[in-house]
Image (cartoon, rainbow, N blue to C red):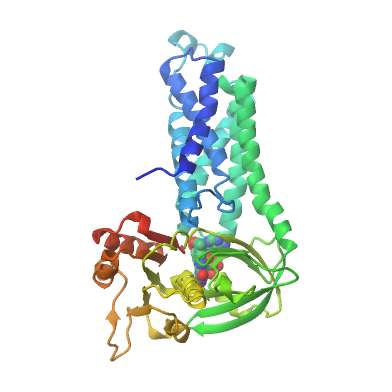
Length: 436
Ligand SMILES: Cc1cc2nc3c(=O)[nH]c(=O)nc-3n(C[C@H](O)[C@H](O)[C@H](O)COP(=O)(O)OP(=O)(O)OC[C@H]3O[C@@H](n4cnc5c(N)ncnc54)[C@H](O)[C@@H]3O)c2cc1C
């Protein structure tokens, strides 16, 4: 597996203050102290740089949203382990004589425990531990997603500020002005990223408002939402991309949710979305007033990128994961793209299926419905989209070199990937997006 260039860049940048420290200050301590300092400086830099992986910045090469957030999480874990476990515990303690005289100021200095720098370091350490636990166990917390996100962002920023203060006040390398400038620049970059996502971008979006043009029930617990631009030409997007929507609320509201654009660019400036009721916000979507303002932060995501050259396309969709497939199939219909296409769509019941007529008119498309709770007399596939079934249903397409687009909940994607791997489909031919 090749490491994404972005990951390599972030890792290299995070080592910059350590290398500068060695170059400008020079290691003159036991190697354990050097390792502790390096873990502290590199870990802190990685955390600060991780702020830019909020998912709102265009990346090159483009990456699916779930991979960006996974990278954000994995870098934070790596940095967190270095900062929590290595940094404070590897420093050597002063010699026995100094240990006998804890009131001697050199004792505190030898441990780097002088002044307020130690207090900010300890607070940052505790806050970081709390941040990691609340991120890894988010599903177990009694908080709304919005509350968790606000906590995650704000406490991350406070923790970063405390940690940089600690490094500048007690760190040996960070006392060098060049190393200090690099750390402060990384902190500034993190702060600016949050400022951009929370304030600047919403303010820019406020100048491009949208209107809820229609809200129609589509199927069991699923709605179609149509937005139209007010006084501007709308979005330029590729089928498969998604947007964060603020619906019937202000541009600065924290209530924003990601939804895939299910319409095709060929349809014009109106955007269509399909929304499944799963939680607080989506369960109340049907009650939003038609005509109300909306704000669209997008397009984001890279699903659908690189499918142009494929000999054929296979869509493996779980439930509302049909959304990106709908956009791509609608665009294919508009362009008369006759390449062979197969849609395998997993649902519980037939009442959850929609857009059947439209899909039947897409050139070259074959559809297989898989139902886990089929009605009496159902002749089709029964069960879920597990790896075994996927292997059986798409073996011919895998052998013919077709590209695969996977969309749905994480468990389904893991199963689908396992099935495709068993059929020998290379990762480059598998495109996916998680909805959870
Ligand atoms: C890239 C992407 C595209 C998506 N496209 C669609 C789509 O086309 N149609 C559709 O019905 N659903 C889609 N979803 C899922 C949709 O965003 C969630 O179902 C919705 O946000 C749930 O909000 P809730 O308050 O109703 O439920 P909750 O019970 O509050 O949330 C359920 C889960 O949804 C996720 N979630 C909630 N709020 C947010 C948020 N603001 N930002 C990110 N994740 C959040 C969290 O994982 C949460 O645990 C997509 C998700 C992603 C990540």
